[in-house]
Length: 444
Ligand code: GLY
Ligand code: MN
Ligand code: MN
Image 1 (cartoon, rainbow, N blue to C red):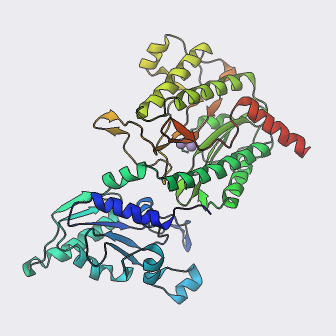
Image 2 (image 1 turned 30 degrees about the vertical axis):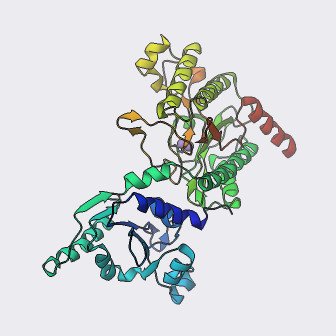
Image 3 (image 1 turned 90 degrees about the vertical axis):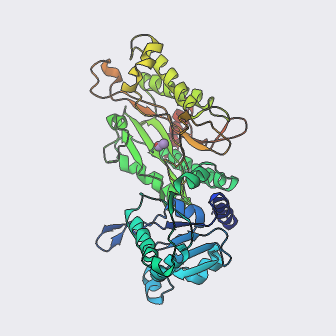
């Protein structure tokens, strides 16, 4: 299994601490367990910020960073070992494991946090935390601060500054290291293989969930614990619903099927969309729309390189799509004016991409000081133009209605442009039709 090496977590903590003010403390909670129903829990997924700094996979844990603390800068509160609970629910690192396997300088039982943490906070000038994103944890933090305040008459000094950690931490997360790119390449490789498998299995009469099952099979076989987000398997007119999740309609001959799905490896997402004909051959109209979206994506790739800004790729897709829609007669008028009036949004209503990383819609600012962010080496993003012709669009000829096409790949900015991580899945009309034809021949 490819994963983030331990040394990298230590590097990240050091890099964050180097940016924190002197005499400060950062406090981050692990993700809570989410109940699905009664005694059943959702599959546990660690909080991305917590994971980024610790690699510690357990719930009920709190990470504390105290730059300059002589007795150790990295403290982890976590569950104690417990033979009875471990018999039912699985092994725990315990405090020994937190130090031995996860690099903590000091570790305490999570049940002791109310007694210990106020003492650690006391005397520090500034507290960094993810304010506002976890109300329950915010309340705990205020309780700990109030313990210190209540002892002010004994000389206890509560901190005076409370700062959102996001700005520092999320900027770090935006730049992917070599190890992160390696993990993302692996997630992309498995997801590409999943899309190939779904293409090969595609047949009229199956259901959307039949193809979802093919995806899930490859994800799990590749070692992914779960998809990075709910898989979208949208056939026919469902392809015009951007975040379709029902995945239970029948696949019909003559329809397209749009699949937007990617797995997660070591908490890093991949995010791929392909759109193909259920029965293996694009109709003339489907092909025209498909090739237009593909041309838009190619134009976007050309705008992803250091020193180009975030919006250039999106602008390129808008130009290509608007021009193409006019050529096909789906929009009428002057291309420049149609772009200015955003007429293309009737068909292309989302942006060309988003940052990609531990969160599928990853953290990181898109604008800095009011200006679009300039791309730099190591930033990862998706490139995903689409055209969706609503089934009830009265302004276009019937033959176009209900066609929805999106093509999405994942890229990392390199010195000279970008590396496409998701190349392992066919993309041109010829490549897709050939792959599907071959699968049919083999099955026959
Ligand atoms: N799958 C969500 C997205 O493409 O943004
Ligand atoms: Mn995406
Ligand atoms: Mn997607």
